[in-house]
Length: 156
Image (tube, one colour):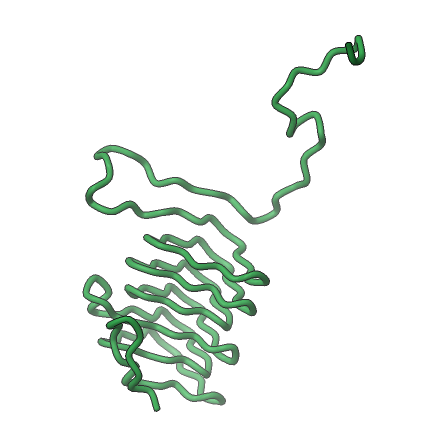
């Protein structure tokens, strides 16, 4: 049931079931699926080698999340570090800053925090990661979004 492999990824060997609440920091190896609630950080010990964390639609984490491949369909309140891939499913809600190497974000997913791309070692040294602030983005006026200077003389 939890042992299906996808693209050579780690197997999901552990489950925190719906209706289960865990208080305290957790570490795991391989793969973990959270259908319940975790109040504390969740770290994969082999995050650099392919560890996988899945937070289902009924799952939630209040604390830092760190794994190689993170799939979120539920809710995270805290920072997220995905050393390889972060997948945000349509009902995902992340309230915290996010660092990732690759990002797949479905329509409907919400991130309230900073998204920062963590480059691969092949990228130029000294280059700062690109960041995009998504929380509380105010709509911009036409004058702010236009790249052409405005003049009062009209068309002509």
